[in-house]
Length: 111
Image 1 (cartoon, helix red, strand yellow):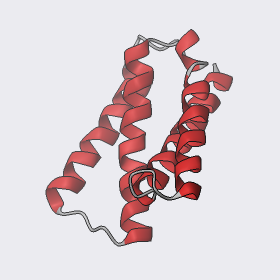
Image 2: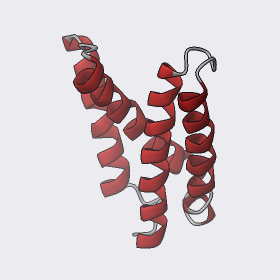
Image 3: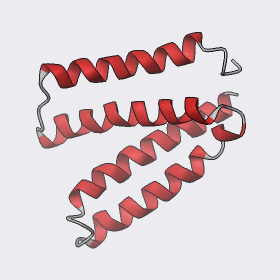
Image 4: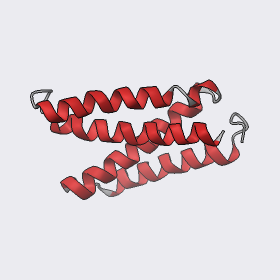
């Protein structure tokens, strides 16, 4: 099961890289960020296919998308100075709590 979580983490990081590059691709008019976006999403989906073999789709997607939202927001905040207000931070905190609850308490995942 640990191998599948490693692939899930890799999928999350590839998606964060791809989405960050997508924001810099200027609607796919800049070659470098556009290529990173395409490659990043390809790697993300490939990595995502492994945990989907042994974990429920909804759980995998909740972890992948939830962590992606939080990490992309953190990258945008730190690197690009895109500040977040209290409601945004509260919402992301609730997303993180949801991911923790699914991982710690859900019987849907074979730990």
